[in-house]
Image 1: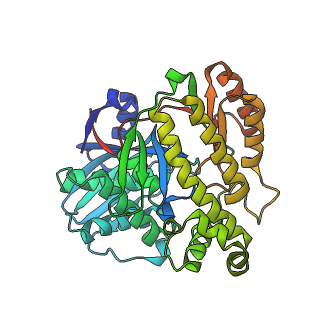
Image 2: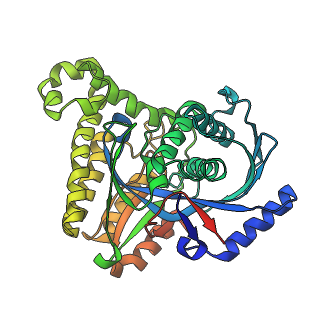
Image 3: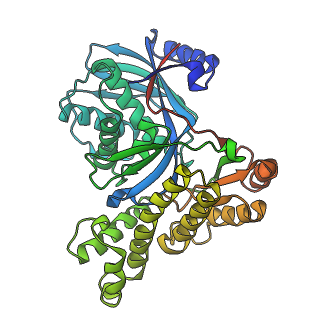
Length: 406
């Protein structure tokens, strides 16, 4: 496990000083170790990971940090700033249905994942604080899961559990214990860090390649705009996407769309429409094209062709809007903050840069690559509509889950 200083993390000592104080006030003791895990931004590969596709993602400079003290009582107590304490007995790692959609489920699931893979677990107290806002599209849940995994690796496994395995355990916790059928991209991007191209053809052994992109050298900034939409009751909308994609795969006798070609789908369109419906077909076609776009985007980065990079981002966004159809929930057609943000982005960028829906979709955020000379006006224009602080100007973080030395 990589260890970094606070200055390497890009944070402030005041942030950790405050964390130490809150730990002491809550637990009446002093922490001995500190950890951090970042949020992530999906660059390309919108809803491809859960069907064993490719993604390009980046860790960002917003993170969840933890002050930690190991204990010998067999209990894990995690107090997150602004939330009640979660307390888990490590002798009871079965799924608790009443815990679904809770941080307690994620903690218990990560502990269970470590134990089932033959790693050591133990008790600890942790106080966490996050600037990866919930619902921001930057995967606060994945960052939290990776943080817990990084803590357990650091305290009880000598920091030797790989970033890839921590991500796999985190996904297991989210799927089985939390109850959300997510792919592996969020956790992998948070755990590994930097710009990463990931091929999930074999999820147990994903192929990970780092790519280097200096946005500032190209005169652009990465912005995430939080439209502050309501994420309540959206799990069925998210779950329908992998379900419908797999229905197309099953039509061809396969388990995942990665095993089906675009040509297969086009050739069988009449019968396929009848069998699974048009939306499932469109989502499958999005998958096939988006999977190819990831490789195209990574190639553009390696060739330092930023114009081609922006072009692929635009096409990815158009496909998500028209074919994947994850910009708003069908049950709430009057709530279309993401669609409105995309319109505003197009207007404010005036043909430059690029913008697209970000992450799972339906409510929440868009991503934009904004030229430096338009940045100030872009931020003001977005925040006029969606509120102060709704437009994040981010940097890419070169590392994932880490231990922090003060």
